[in-house]
Length: 167
Ligand code: ACO
Ligand code: ZN
Image (cartoon, rainbow, N blue to C red; front, side):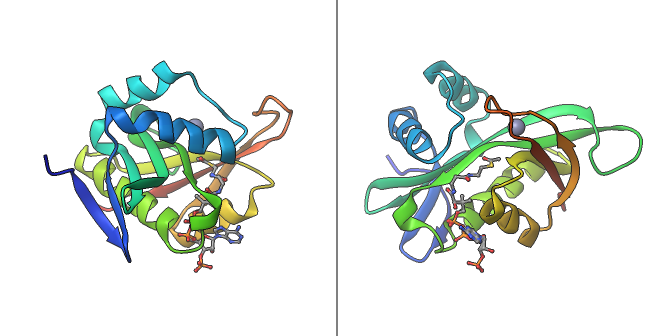
């Protein structure tokens, strides 16, 4: 069966995650980020938001992923009011495949899927020390909208970053 391709970056393909990809996605998460989740967390997001759980693949090998969720809550960009928000829960690219535009492609593809669900903004939390990721998000239009002190288990703070999503 044809897999659901959503973007191309050079020889890399961005496509929807499938249940069989989850163990590899979990492994990439384990080796690249200090924030881990139970397997049911991944499968639940995949079941609920299949069109916005994406992987990047090269020659059949999954080398990166992004997981998103749609939420309804207070806007991070307007002073008052509620918004349907896309939440970038987690994104990572394997070390040896970084700096090739895959992270950018995964975020931009997420925005398209989130826009299709009528969300008007996208947000995420990122460690205040994660300069590379912060630069990526700023390049894609995100700005820091707040700081969450001691957000991570080890006590580090998070920036909340958000951007408007064009429809
Ligand atoms: N140092 C400086 N700038 C960086 C770095 C870095 N290490 N990484 C990315 N950037 C910036 C650059 O501005 C780059 O643009 P440029 O290539 O024009 O200079 C821009 O990000 C885009 O880079 P991409 O090649 O599109 O991104 P990449 O495929 O390398 O993926 C990612 C970026 C996902 C942050 C990757 O470095 C990674 O997996 N890091 C470890 C996991 C992580 O920190 N994930 C984010 C946690 S926050 C969250 O999940 C919501
Ligand atoms: Zn989050």
